[in-house]
Image 1 (cartoon, rainbow, N blue to C red):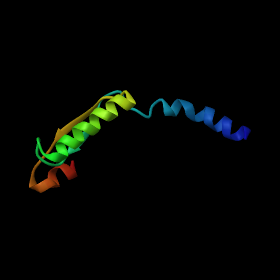
Image 2: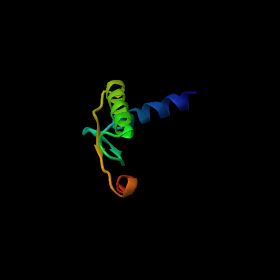
Image 3: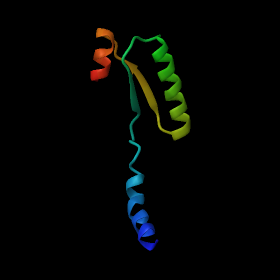
Length: 71
């Protein structure tokens, strides 16, 4: 049990770096205004509220989703 607490104390500084300083980008592979865009923006809003980190949705449509999936 002591080993567990010692390991936990060693890992605490790394947990502080789990979230980046800049906004997190969610890539929507379909056109802006589509149902996936609305779902992505709702998800980004919920993540921003829950995690306290900015989440941004960008749409990269083209070649029916291939361009966004590759990005």
